[in-house]
Length: 60
Figure 1 (cartoon, rainbow, N blue to C red):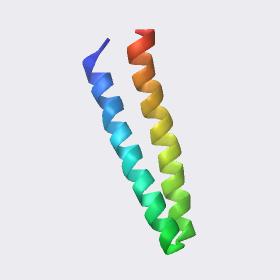
Figure 2: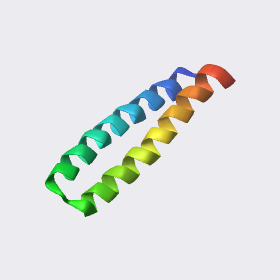
Figure 3: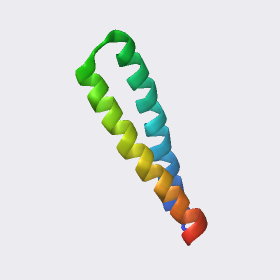
């Protein structure tokens, strides 16, 4: 297991959590263009971080 890739996966997970907060905030403001970008960021960064952590823990 490489520590650098594991740490990078955790950093991307932090970005995904911040995107989730942004998604909720923009839903309250009814800014649907920002909701689109926050949702896309949450989906992409969340998937990437989970798969990176999964591969480092179980497939390495």
